[in-house]
Amino acid sequence: MVSKVKPFLKINYLARNEGIQGTLPSNKFAYRLYTSLAWPAALEGMLIYLISSIDLMMVGSLGADAIAATGIMTQPRLIFLSISRSLGVSVTALVARRKGEGSTVDLNKCLKQSLLLICILSTVSLFFSLKYIEDILYFSGAQAGYMGMAVAYGKTVIIAGFFTSIAVVVNSAHIGVGNTKIVLWSNIAGNLVNMILNFFLIYGIGFFPRLGIVGAGIATLVGSITTFFITILSVCYRERELFILGKESWIFEKKTIQSLIKVGSNVFAENSFERVGMFLYSRMVAQLGTVAFATHHICMNLCDIFYCFGQGMSKASSALAGQKLGEKRKDLAVIYGKIGQRLGLMAAFIAFIIFFVGRRWLMMLYSRDLEVIALGADILIIVAICCFTQTQALIYSGVLRGAGDTRYIALYSLAIIAVFRPVLTWMLCFPLGFGLYGAWMALMLDQALRMFFASKRFYSKKWMAVEL
Image (cartoon, one colour):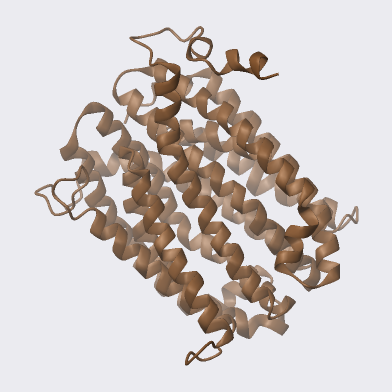
């Protein structure tokens, strides 16, 4: 079996019909380069959500209302972070392209002006989010039984999002130049602080007060501040490629801002469509009742662990696509995208086995409610199947983002996430009566369509023509 698969992994096979523009790397070098970028980014995402899962287990001991109160804040928080994540994709693409071109001055201009921009935008978002937090949660579908807990938790999480937004931009620049290990360690440090404080503040261990869900919010805030300080310090050393204390201008320049907006506006549109779609999706699930929503939140958390692993591979694909296009090696940009696709399939197969075989045990880690465990064990079968399409969609779209071809992603995101998934979810959940199963069937079809459109664009090679 292994001998039959090996030829499909070799560089000579991946380079067929690619119009080779120079010397090809060896199999060992190419896979080592990709994994050197991918494993820290993938491990970072996976560990963050593993720690988040431990947090959820702690909150889960407080009951279904507490799980629902934290879960209802997920979509508003992601909407708040959509600005920084959109800008982050622009920063990664632009910094990677400038690195490939050998322009250190321009890549540092990009970082500085991006930091100034995100500080302004996040301050405005923070003010309005705190002012209207209760209205936002009510619109999200929060039930009266846990609204008070959700508001208290949500305020601290939104403040934490301000610091996270700045860290996201800095780490996006690190990804662009290939410094994914810095991204890994800064986020691990912040999330470990979060997890440890959760233990003390949720349960009131030692001299700490028992704060319950409010303690979880405070722990998130302190963890975010920790990551923020580490990421800022990482760009304050003169000997490093990324350096914010150098002579490059902080003042907005037309060339840099135009490039950031060119990529970022489409990514923001994509994120907006995704958040609107997920917002409607989450609201409909919340209407299925507290048990269904608590089960959904646990299953989504488990799904997101592997999703973040796939995002790490997506970031590696973005960085390498941008760098190779900057070096005028379009052939290598395609080859590294194919390497990611094959490694993604392997990772998805392992995840499928874990979710399918261990589904009941995984649910028991989060909840003691027998109804939640039984329902969640069924939903995790769908999660296991989604691993394949989800990973492929992330890796292909990562290449497109690294090239700056974000308009195409925004268009299919509008059609699939903002329109198709909410409509299908409503039909399956309510008129057809599938309940929570219907919501996850809709998600599975959503992921399959995203994979189809992203892969189609990748193989068309139109993304290679984007100028930054």
